[in-house]
Length: 262
Image (tube, rainbow, N blue to C red; front, top):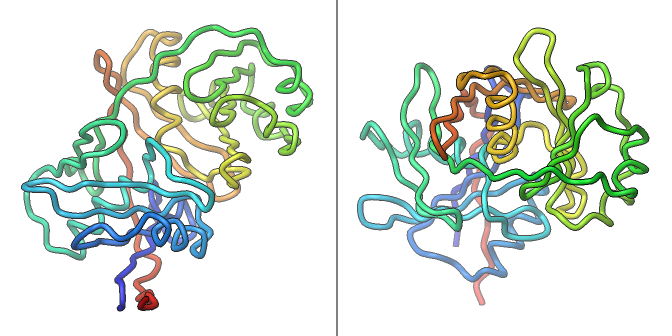
């Protein structure tokens, strides 16, 4: 059996930017162990799989290590594959996921995703977190990640985390952030427990970042840049308990996977 796969650079304007995601359209669900094996073989931060579900699609995301509850860049890439390669023509597409229904609409040259905003609480910085980052932060909050706030973009750029120590922490990962020099805020995202030491551009993290910065800056529309080696830009808008994340995509590769028959 051959399975079509697309590799897309999400939150990117050019190839080799943004966050690469593999997208595999399916007619019906395959065994979970096979989905996980494909994700492990791809060795990307996320591999997305979707199947038709009435007038919508069911969407799942896998890291090389496990299935996750929410992923932004692979959702953006899945919408791109539907519209660009599979002749989807409606103005919006709804994906049913572990995090509920997620709607993606066309927005300029890219797409806009409607995601749930994360709830954040102020947290005392765990000693392992400070030790792993090598620097005491200004503020720490917790959602599904630790949100760690510093004073400057230069501090974010200069961090050299100890990923083994970060694995000791209890939440999904660590998101560090500060005011940006040319954008409203910058960030970096570390998920060593998911075998993704540093994620290039993380849509789901902006469900935490955007509400924090909207509250701090007193406005709902924000520009953001993630300062990974590849880097990428995310436009954010906060409305009530939702976060709207916009970005562009670029095709990198179209491939076929050879699935062994039992």
